[in-house]
Amino acid sequence: LRGELGQFSPLEVVPKFAPLLSRLRVMQVAFGNEHAVACTEGRTCVTWGDNSAGQIGNGHKSVRSYKPYEVEGLDLVVSVAAGWGHCAAITGEGDLYTWGLNSHGQLGLGDTDARYTPQCVRGVGGGEVKQVSCGQAMTIVRTSEEIPYIMGKLPAYAKDKQPPVARDAYGLALEPTELPRRVGEDD
Image (cartoon, rainbow, N blue to C red; front, side, top):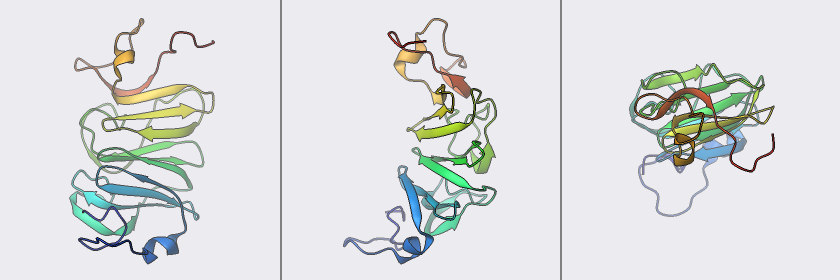
């Protein structure tokens, strides 16, 4: 274990109350491969667990963090998500921030460089970001105008659409890319 259970010790085999988390009054929590991200009642973002790709957001990568870290640079966080090795947060203003592993462009920042602190994602049109979900190598958001955008590794159905979804030579959406409507969806 790498601290992702919130027990804050190397190995816990018996369920145990996590007092440091209860004091934070967690409103939402998401789990990645071996890390976690949470949104608190005070609208802060906290992370803990594995940090080998910078997914804790503390400015560097390290093995793990057993104690919650309040991610700096994020104000009024309303929602969080976690992927394999990356995190995402939505602020009260509808801005999307991402950080951590970026091997497939899942951070939506135009490249595949990892980020160790939250970065604001530009290029999401169609209103404010209202919902975010992360997969192993992708991030998908939905805007207030119900427009879905993807960043990172594209699902198979999006690769063969006409017109095709914008992607690089390796089939990756390095920036927020509007997903095409599926057959049968209303305009």
